[in-house]
Length: 402
Image (cartoon, rainbow, N blue to C red; front, side):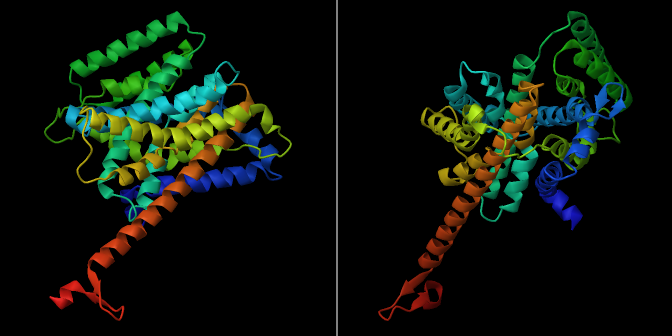
């Protein structure tokens, strides 16, 4: 049963939901104080507590995995040619720009403007997990579209993190990062088919990037760029595939669930004056729930009308809308950006997380309702097409009459 769930990619999404609920329950119980103390006060390595270790180190490993997925898709997958890549790329651009515009309509020139990166992200694991749970109601051919869309989404989010949320840059560590990256490229050129030097240099790169003021997770993406993608040994698969296979269960079953457990430990206290941040909440919720699907649908529709891209033949616009609604599940990526955007402001982080959870829940509910109605309609239409009615109102199967 576990192998089946892993193969269908349901389990990561289910784990994220379960651990989020667990974290919220504990944080709002009598154990809340002790729970926060364990996560934020106890040092486990130098200055790092569990919260920092998860967000700054373990998420760098997750971004290494995301970087490997992006590289694989660009070289061999659904982003390897313009014809394959154009539809999800155009959709992803709309799914980033429209939520950002909606957010800024409410929050431009406010203290919340730095949160513009929050509603532009899609959680791959969660979105695919929900897709697999609802797979009988959705067009199965669009799983690849959702994956490709989320991969491009993540690439844009990575650029946003690197550009908008890096501060206090220390040039000396930036130069050391560049030198380390250069050595990694040299190791790649030497066609060394051994993971150890890449992992060792990757750890050094992480330290230098973290110390430079650029967000440490960028080191994971930089390391992914240097991992060899071609087959260098007759007996082994390419290192990119081997490493991706090793990291997938680690990321989906440990790092992302731990991230959810650590970062959703927020107080749902009614004492908080949410009116002081109402534009922030509206911007995030509307950006994810409305902006995401609207941007994806608008840009892909315009793209097909302008002959920039082509809609998949196996999908109609309603099935694409359903997948676009799932893109509103920002969850881990949106929470991650919120943690960076509002660093050292716990209240704004908590309000952002509550907004993200609301938006993700609303997106799932809307997708379920519309997909159920559409599925029943198609089923009834198919049944009616297969039957005729006699004068007494009795249905006969057309095939039987023939």
